[in-house]
Image 1 (tube, rainbow, N blue to C red):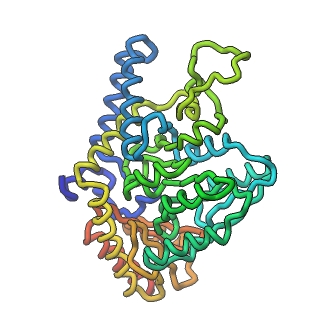
Image 2: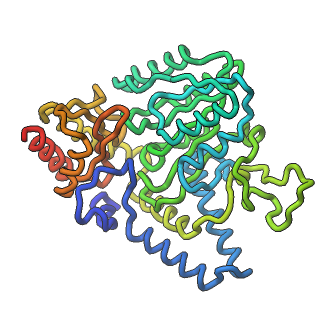
Image 3: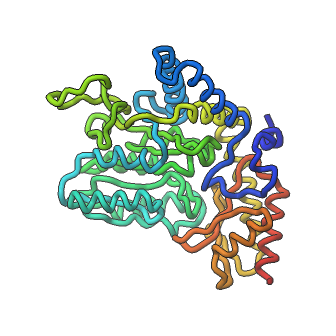
Length: 396
C-alpha cells in the first residue's frame, strides 16, 4: 500500500493540513471499524458471560504479543497500559530506592514524568540531578558523543535511576539508548533506565532501545495512529525481579477471584503485576489494525526514511521564512521539526491563525518554540502550504 492509499483511510486528513502527529495521530477508518466490531462482538457474547472470556483473552494476548514483538521483548515483559505516563510511573514507583539515592533526569522530559519523579523524590528523600541534552542540536554523531559526555559528567556514585526519552519531544533528537544502557550496566550502583517512548513508537525502530531499557513506556495514539487510551511498557527482567507493584487491582493478581490478606505476594511474577483493572478491550482491536496498516506501507526503517525526507523539506523551507530559526542545526533525524519565531507575537495566537486556515501545528513552552510533525503520508503540497503560510504571517 502506497502513501496515497494509506492517506485516503484517514477521515481527519480530508479537511485539514495536519502536522500534529506528535500530539495525536488520526485514526484510520479500518481501525475505527475494528473498534466498533469488537464492541458489537462483546455485546453479542456478554458483556459478562462465560462465553465472553475466551474472546477477551484472545484480544489481550494478541495485543500483548504484537506490541512485545515491536519492542523486541518476550510477551511476559510487556504490560498493557492506558498511556505513556501510567506505563512509566507505575513501575517507576515500585523500584527499590533508599534515602539519599539520586535520580538523573534529562532536561527534555515531559512534565508528567518529571512531576512524578519530583513527587517520588520528595516522598523517598531522593536527590534530583539534571542531564543536559536540550542544546545538543547538531549531527547524529556529535549528538551521541554529547549525550555520553553529559552522562559521564552528571552520573553520581548514588545515581539509582536515569530518565531519558528515546526521541526528544521538543527538539526531535534521537537519544543513544542502547549506549546509555551499556554505560549504566557498568556503573557500581547499576542505575535503572526509564525511557519515555511517546514520540518513538510507530515512528522509528524501537526494538533495540526497548529491549535495553528497564522501563520503556509508549502509547498507540501518536505515530502509530491508534486510538487514545491504550499503550504499553516493556520491562526488563531485572525490574520484574526487583520492583513491587504500586497501583494494584485484580489484573495484578495471580488469583483474581479470592482475596487472602495473609498472602504477602499474590501478584503476577511477570509484567502483569503492573496492570491494574478493567480496560477498554475494543481499543486493542483498533490499535492492532493501525499497526497492521503501518506495516503494509513498509518496514520501520523505510517509514522513517520517508518521514525524514518530508521533515527535511520543512526544515529546508524554514530557511526562507523571515525571523524563523530551526532548533536543529542539521537536517532532522525524525519527523519533529521545532523552530523559534522571530516576532513578539504569542505563539499560541500564531497556532490559532494557522488553524483558521486549516493548517495545524503546535507551540511548546520548553524551549519556547513551534513544532510541526510529518508522517509517511504527509504530502509535498502540505509542506509547501505550511511554508507559504509561515512566510505570509512572518511579513504581516
